[in-house]
Length: 395
Image (cartoon, rainbow, N blue to C red; front, side):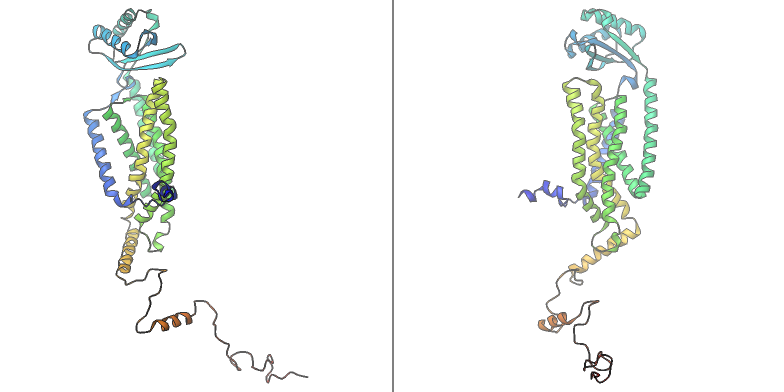
């Protein structure tokens, strides 16, 4: 029973999952998700960190109370000193001098920041020098964003050239579409859930592109292996050979994704969640979400899209038609499949005659099985005298 389970068949590449055959379903699902992501971009937008939107950051000692208590106190102070400005994010940060709470707020003027810092020290009952603050301009975030887009364009250009040289242009198109879909869906999750976008998030986005590309190349390499010289036989269509490659590489891709997600999950849930390393949260979050989405897009989108593009090739299209026509002829009994047993009787000849004819027919390239002809034309003389006529030995 265990040998025939789904897990065992996945490891052997024998699960026979019809992924490519259901490509319309995957395209439809991907289209709906992309539409939801785009609508979220337009309606919700992104929750930008102070590095992009501009703002102030205050660090207070964790000894003042819990994180929630500190956040409420600072909100009350800001309501008095700078109406309309509030705490955007609050997190615990571990440092060499002990744990501190980092409170990020909206944009404050220098006078408002100084007054808020003095009021915080009075509310917490600590010296003002124990509270540190900094101001970040949105211009710095704009520079980071522009450089990130430039890096993305360079990455996509280099990847396209590599895929065209390594595989072909159709595989390059399918891979690039898969990568862009991965970025859109991951960004959509950030927009829907309201995750904060920081410079670490941008770095994470560029990192998941490399992982997603690796996953696609692994699958495409197997597809290329299975479809090399496919037009020389009429056994499988291009889509069927690609689907077989997906089944054969599915477990490898799954193992790679799981192995990659485990340390990232540890970084996110243990490092940021349990240990309070808030600086790791932004990077770990985008890596975890992006890698999970990359696995799905590389399996359910990249290869089905490749098959759709390859089927437009006249050579592949003609091959697919030959395969389907041959199967239809076999189903009608007009063609005997290769390797199938001979029919019991041919025409009006009895079964025994067919068997005799089958046994008597020599194989191609075999030597004749009958006796050699005798006489002057057929071989050696019957007398056994070699090349001498008459056959008598000379005394």
